[in-house]
Image 1: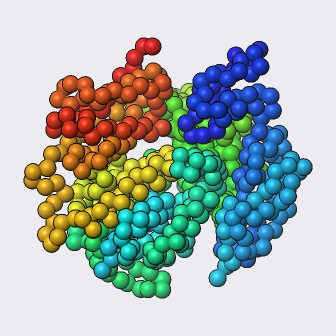
Image 2: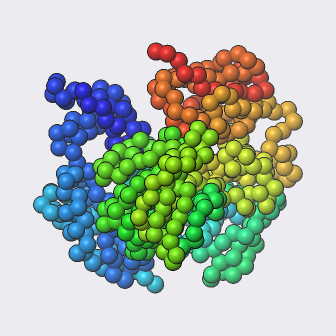
Image 3: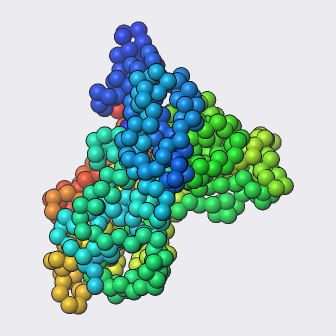
Length: 118
Length: 426
């Protein structure tokens, strides 16, 4: 039996995952918690949120995220890929910045509208 | 003359303005000192926002963007780069802006939504040298996430509030080495999920019941000394650990930014450091409302939104259906009033006063507990008799609690309500 704190939402449910019985999850308040408990023991994933360089933007950095969770052990590979990006302003929220980043199947997308510097 | 002036264009101000527009007000002004709307959300690039309000997981900028878009569909006027200098008792707002200069605007109602600011090194009196490299976590967050500067390479974080935890992860992802997160209390001030996904994920040690007792370095931080503390939070000699680092980030609490509120003569609650409010977020000054982190520091923006919508709707109601001519005061002479008291285990409540006659169905009540509790009951008593109880499996000071009190129950109460926590065996 493994005890985990669910990170799906800010509620932070205290989960118990039974590895010997197909990773059955108890202590969750929603189905997403059950899924998280199972995933965390089999192949943990995370959404990466970071920034990329933004050329001519209101700010020098534009925030981005992976549009889905990627394998936890690939996070630093994604960070290295973001380092190579120079996004021209203006940028729009949801705009794809890197397609299929590091072959994870996730796209990196902008998380705000970034107007050009006035 | 504006129907409503909203001071602050962060999540609280945006939600209040939108709700007031929906409530029927057509001359609304938001005054914001930054160069864009959205407030602190713009630098909170991590996700986890919006699960309650939008039923999906958004980053801070996305959450702000949704509200900016909603606001764009209204006729609400916005003045950016404009600082409010004073709010008077007769609801005049003095402001100075880059393009508009000094202006005095009259409002029929006001929503105070100025948010909060970080406690600094001076506020907690850390001994030691005064080198560069000591930042509040939120300032570092803005440098990294918006301005594109890395504050340092080897980092110690004091305080385990959410911003400190989030910055531990952020600095690690950006290539810094975070050596330790140090918390003076025996429990973390942040959300459990952030301990897991910001510290455990990166093997960053969390030292509970520890604090920083010395900062060393000539021009730049070179070392930070961390000591264990006893039950009275006094450092224990002989427990010192020395960390070689160039940066110390402080996440040691937030203070509601209430200079304007105090200046206007509005009653302040010493426990929340925000205005004393009634059930609809009205302050002691009629027609002036407060919401979001300026009223009490929240953990979740979703709750800021809900509270601010309440304040915005109440401002609209005040202007459209409120008293003509002379204000009768916040509580009319024939009106029932309940004062909410903090019982055992409770550090504060919002609202502090309830006018049962103005509650429609439910009155939401926010509060915090003063220690970590397992299997507990939240008890509501009036005149010594218990009138309601709510069960909770887990309560912590870092996680704001919320109960809804039905109107029928408030009608039964006499003069006061006391909220207390009792741990119960299962």
